[in-house]
Image (cartoon, rainbow, N blue to C red; front, top):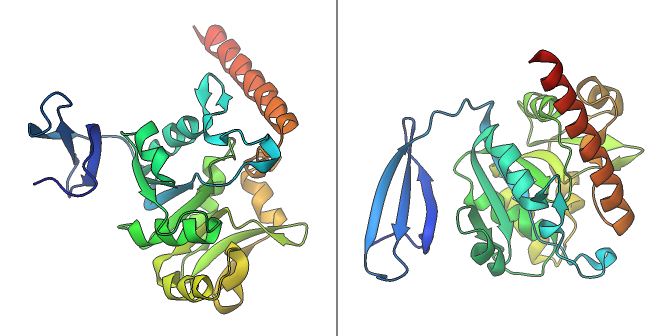
Length: 255
């Protein structure tokens, strides 16, 4: 019998020890026909951590449009983030609603334990599902996350419960690193009706990453740009097109 998260079409089940991944395939025409396939997975992995993409949110400032499906550089935003992080992490978890499972059957989608409870519930659900105690967390609507900045956050988290950037006097909790041992603190805040990610910070051992530190990895701090409005989307598309154009020119000059 396949595990509970096995789904129709193709669904990655879990990472195996060694460089193989078990994929469970269920035939739509014959639901009882199940195949398990071991696929060699030799991608060079940058980070020994789980990546969690938070893909919930009500998108009120985008007139109700699902931000995960906004197109950036020819790809839906969630697909863009997933492809990017799959180059850096062995395991990528997407936390969202039940519809995400149907829309992206090939992704490891974890449904919030209680839907509609905000980003704190998303963080809790992702950490609980992670097989690695160290988790890098990013919101779905941040398209320009820098690999060097991710490395900085993970390195600085050693010996702490979490590593979080602080810009202009405010935390950036949706681009940060969290340890699974924070789960009891988060659960306590959820029980008290809290929804803000920063609600448990006062009880956690935090490695604060300053703006100067962040700029050593991401000088323009583009990793923190997020898409909240139609104008943000327009700006993101302009930046993305500019980067793609520069890359094409570089490729042409080196040919």
